[in-house]
Length: 123
Length: 204
Image (cartoon, rainbow over all chains, first blue to last red; front, side, top):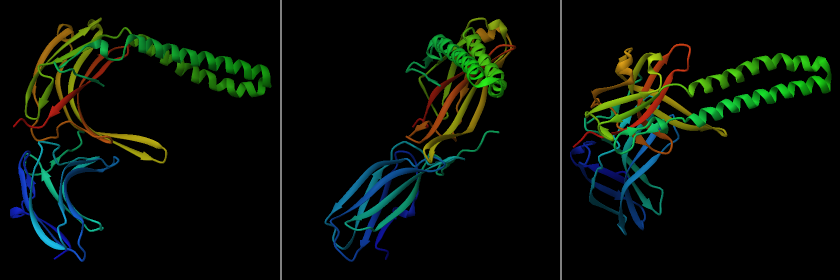
């Protein structure tokens, strides 16, 4: 197994606004971390300087060198995942250990349509 | 761009003001006068040869400055629009009614249009400068008329599309929606006002 892992129930990665994400974090490290942190956040990519919005963070203290824990997050109603000509907005879950530099990120989609909103260019 | 209040109304007075336009006219005139004085100084102090090189540039700059001053002064007398939405915010897929009133000499307007527009706006830095790029991803003409009565006041209902992005504002990246009013007036500055609209996610 990779040192850190985020598994989503039924491997579901697309969510509607206000839906709850259920999953399990798993870790297998060479040393005991003080804590693990699982964050739900969005970030922008593209032409503009990156913006980040951290929505919620779960902290697991003294988790031991290996193990697993279930988690759940209730998503807000916005912002939607979208991709435009200049800007994309991406939602993700990220697990990190402290101390240490291990990290794993899992991208998800928040949208009423089940897919990211695509913005074109009006001619 | 001017934002709508919680009642969905924006008065024309909150748009670029008469005082602002008068200030811009005086600003252009001031720099025209300054440039003219500078040219006179160059000719007198450094002789005709040097003055002639500067003198050739002054008419071009002077025309631009005078033109700017005249344009801003004329714009003071341009008709002013006020918009009122039936609600302060509109959800994706939601409907709204827009009313407008244009004060001033609307009989001079050849054509009046109201357009709903969605724009991506991305801010970034290159070296020490900051740039903002924009992309229009949605545009819908809500109303177009050449009738003076309809230009003076009117209303139109519209429905926002469902499958697009709501308003979003972060420090560097934004999705902005606006109602853009354009009134074409021959031989006069056009009416151009933009009113920010808040579009919320699809109602639950």
